[in-house]
Amino acid sequence: MVSVSYGQLFSNQNQFPPENSIFIFAQTSIYNTEGKIVTYFTTDRFNILDLSGFITLIDKEATENDPIVTIDKKKYQVITRKITEFQDETKVIASNVLADNTENSTILVAQFTHDGYKILEGEKAITIWTFIRPMS
Image 1 (tube, one colour):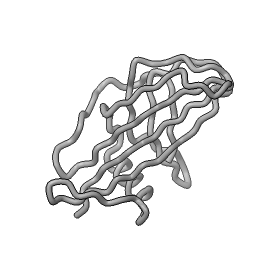
Image 2: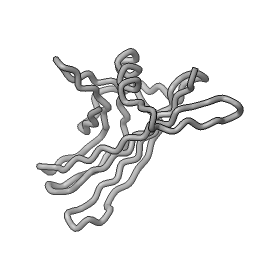
Image 3: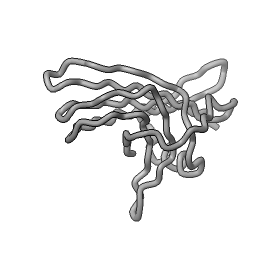
Image 4: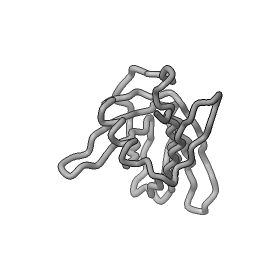
């Protein structure tokens, strides 16, 4: 799984899907070169860019170590992944993209746009992706 951050490309938003669909939540923290947090934001508003690619990515990421929780007698798997990126240049970020690396290409599967932030060379961005999907 790859998390890529760059300027906004898409504008449609697919909010939390109906029952039997996957819920996505992302938290991003930016740390300066001294290790102090300078930006933090969360979102659950996503554009699904490639539904079949997204489902394939979640299936590949899921392991038996990801916890199963029961809510209202229904079982859900909670998949959490942490991605750390060190910045090699100063830029403004207006969206984050979730992508799947395959043998031949990188497939963009989901995107969330946000108010944006400036990140300086040498700073670190940590994004924690959480996916909650129903178990059949």
